[in-house]
Image (cartoon, rainbow, N blue to C red; front, side):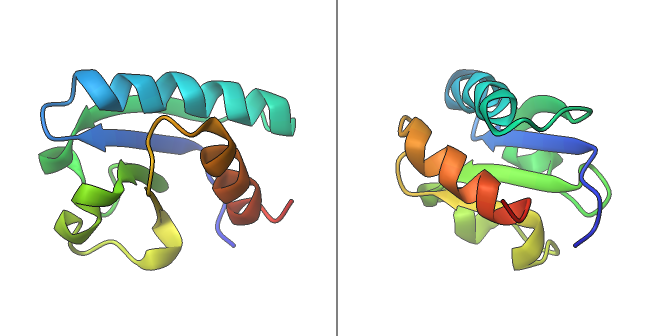
Length: 95
């Protein structure tokens, strides 16, 4: 697994749901004991290889991520479900 130093949370506008997921991601990383990872949020159009090491989006946007491998994205079925996010982050980091 490649080192993750930057996570981008994205939504259609880059404002509402991506900010919620951004805050939840920071909280989940802290609970998992993972530090040294920058978390940002943006619009789905900013997602491209190299923009971040890992991308987190809602299920409605999973099909819009092109050029990014499945190992570099987390697609959430419920963006408000902190447990789902924490579980998927933990799996990604091998915890």
